[in-house]
Length: 344
Image (tube, rainbow, N blue to C red):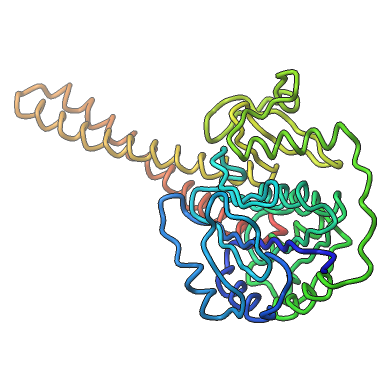
């Protein structure tokens, strides 16, 4: 019997090619279930299982709520649902998004760590930002094996780099070499003993798992998880609570939306840009309306009013040009930061 029988794989940007390479190297007799999640749009259709099926020696299927875990099977996440493991079964969690995603890698890895402990293997592949880093830390916390695609090999190295920062002892390999390492750790003899996790930390992890299942993120006495911060949730605009976990700070609101610090900053940047585009639209409409009112006033012989509307049009036009220039710089900065994990 294998020492480890659950392999959980998270990927994002560049992940389709990485996942194709990864599953191609898995042997047909792998005595473990493999869960695969790629960040997907909530309203989209996925053909990921079909893509992987053509390259994989294992049975590949879409995740179905309630299915038991089966060795030799690759289970692919569905849009708008967290791919979770509870009591040896696949569960499609409809809880709030984490880091703006559902499925969330953090939620998936957290459930694997809590359900399988030392029998779990967490794998992080290419992607932007840091979803999966907090979840991989839990896999390590409960004694599982942690693997990461090497930064040099990843098309987008941000997710792997953040995962390594969270779990410095994780082994990093090229994606083509990861399947062989998975086989080694699944059959490996050197499985560590089940670590002792403090009761308060385990309780926090269970609350966050229940949140992914759709339950309120509150402790046994009904207290919201964490302590109130000064920040609002980008998704529901409620107060975000600070959740301290292993020296890092994450955020979760009363309804369950969860954010790492970096994901929160990125989402705030998106909201700033949206607000600026809205302001630009209003200014341009003000220019057009002022010109229209000036023409009406001119046709009625109201020269003073026509001149006033022309001045307003000129002021709005100047503000719009300044705002458009600011917006273009903002978009460029966000693009650079998204593609460069060393950026702000």
